[in-house]
Length: 282
Length: 318
Image (cartoon, rainbow over all chains, first blue to last red; front, top):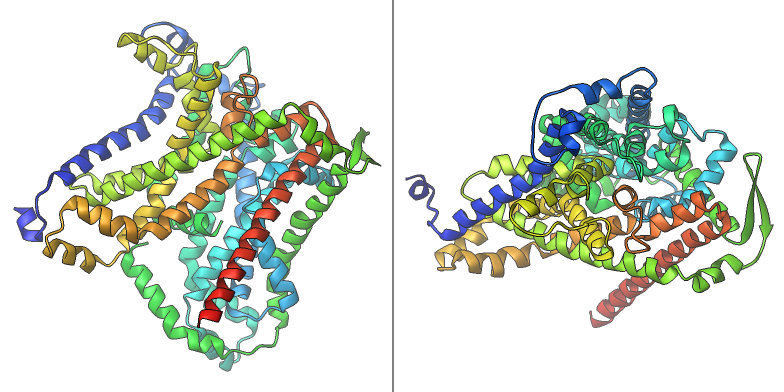
């Protein structure tokens, strides 16, 4: 009935597509669910042969036991996320606004745009030796400050370009009108233009936040591990070549993944807008 | 982000474009101040590390009390890349991984996008769930797949044995390890291709599809002759994004295979980390990084050159 109402002809493609989708969704979710399930299993169920499922919080208890650096690492990751998001929002929206609405001297503009295009392309690892030397001489190696700075460096081009797209969508007459009413440049930016790009700020905020939360390479190379490391590095340290802490690893992985997935459910459209524009610009 | 929103956006841009062209050309103080933090970040952390990298690449670098000492050696580090017996396996592994990962994710992601667009049920739910792997941390993706592929506790071997197939040492054999990291990469990044292509299909002019259906085109014809050609730009864009991302790959291999067995999955980023941080060959590690930047620069210059030539050709024709 509904097919006739919408005028779509019945064809097998639609049904086949539906079945394929069910399979794709199952293949997407099943591995994640398996990790969550294992995180609630006592070790004997994980390493034992045959499938036996119980419910136990022992892995989580071990993770948060005194002396385990995980709580501190969780805190480090939160600090890094907050710092990176704030810096990206402030500097990214200022830069995006300048690129979109203001005139920037050409000798500054062209090298800047070249760098902005270059930084997201190059594998971060190839510049790590140079960054390591720089961070070392700046004295911000080995802690969350340095990681906030590095995350910001690698997220800021995306943040600025995405904000520019949002500012481009505003009519230029708006700025002129505010000027005629006597507002200074900063007031125009802060009170007139910025409130109009809140969706852009939300997209930049969620996306840079997720990227900073997920970041591993700089955490690994620029800290010495333990209580100075972010959560991702803490999780990686549970994977030792000869003795893997399977249960704790699954539990820590769950702790890192579930908040992000919940955020994806709540802020789906901002993440989609970040992924599509960020990926194409990057 | 839906088609309507995009169209409104485009319309606003079209309306406002003439106004913007008329704006003052004088740089304002606020403009300079607004761009300054961004420019400073890019200059300090974009240019200076590369300068340091080059300096290290041409030196014998030592570590003395937390600081570096440089001893100029000319091009010795760069020449060593050509002699190193690890170079060929690393380049080969990187190429196999990049080509395989890009091809598989682009084909599967495009198929997913086309089919989701055609599906009769499950659309709204699938669209939301399918992007989960791209937002989960790469480290967590490795954890998820270690729990599946591990030779000791992995569920995949349990399943294989249960249906009567021989268990495989997924991560322990050269071919199995490469297949494993490709599988993980496909799971991780196919959703991104899906999302990019799906967004472009959704913003297509629906009247074209209706016209095709009125003219008697079947579903298969509509997909092959209309939807795929029309979304080709977004498929190519997705392929470019995947190319960049797959060359960057590090986290998953670092945890799943550590580059092994042997050099089987030793991608370039893993190799540089091992040289620099484990073997502490700082100058040689920097030289490897610098050589990658040189390759990028060469590709970039070639690309710009081709574009300029193409444009000149166009203008002479006109």
